[in-house]
Length: 411
Image (cartoon, rainbow, N blue to C red):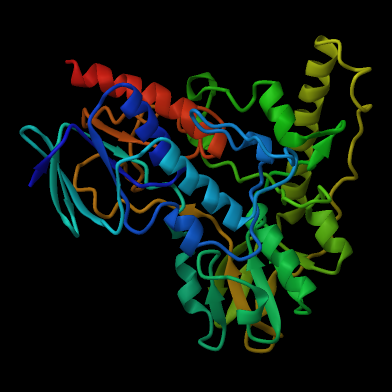
């Protein structure tokens, strides 16, 4: 068994950001990675995916974008190259092909078991991310055996799909992007829509992420939010990264012929059941978008910038069919594939420390696991601030958590 001060689990951008600050604080550590650096980006993403944040926002501790396309959006090879380059830049002590199989608390800290031996350490930072497993509802097992099922972690491109209709379930960024791509491949697509967050790609001449950054909304702390549990469940913005800065929303998908129905709520005798609340969900998303734009407009006015940017505008309300269908008979419909874009969840099956709530979520206070001193988590939604899951958010979280970790080590 090897002994070290801190073990970091995961060599994605969050784990590498933590490694940078641990090194700066002279904390001896190792970064354990189940595959290669940026493993999730390499093995669990579809071919056409681009980041939803502009290139200028690809900021990590000690690194800033220096290219000539600051308003572009990285594709997967570019994202992988960025993370690999950053690992080299910070000289992160990464051990690849080292899968963690168990983390247990003992008298002197934690024992971390892996496929390549054991580590004894005083502290552990779990930076394996929030997107390890696709969330699929239990009733998916009730679909007819003739229906193929995929998730965003197994989907690569339309060429792997059977001919025939496709039902995409989920209307956050992933669901909209995949519905659009599959429809443009010539397959009829039906999109099942639950709660979603509508925003324009650009507003008043700037990317919406620029405004989130400039107005301070991305830096909003978990301690400033009235209902942090709710805030951590808010779906991702309906965005797509493209050279044309396209808006991707339900209206845009409707315009190209994608059929839209309500939230997929269950199965009965081979028939899919869908909620009748689509109008209300769309109205709520429109309302929240306009509130966000109102807040941006107010910030612009308060800072005397009205003449420096484009004038304000509002976008057409989401169009919804008067009576969307409430049922699909999978035995008789043209649908041959269901793609579950219903979110992700982390995988902590190897964590044998009692820090989970009744829903299986880790109990933490801004990444500090108070029930198990010396144990930390990174990369979860709204961990310490609204931008926590973005590339740009890992640095601030790592700085603060590494400071807390240092204080813990000092007693």
